[in-house]
Length: 79
Image (cartoon, rainbow, N blue to C red):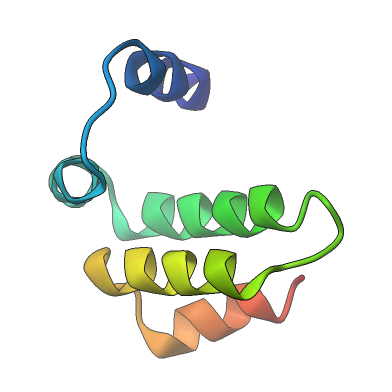
């Protein structure tokens, strides 16, 4: 699965977040970026609580991935 490859690659050689976001913007479709946002929310809420710092980080990522407020709202409504 591509997500496992991405995680393994990222763990092998850590990159600054902004570098990863630039690469994601260049290589992934909008729909794939929406899936990534959904995964981020799933991971962040794995302890059954979405902490303010997690929300702030995800919102920052969403901004850098150019996800619309409408599409972002659809994901937050699923949690």
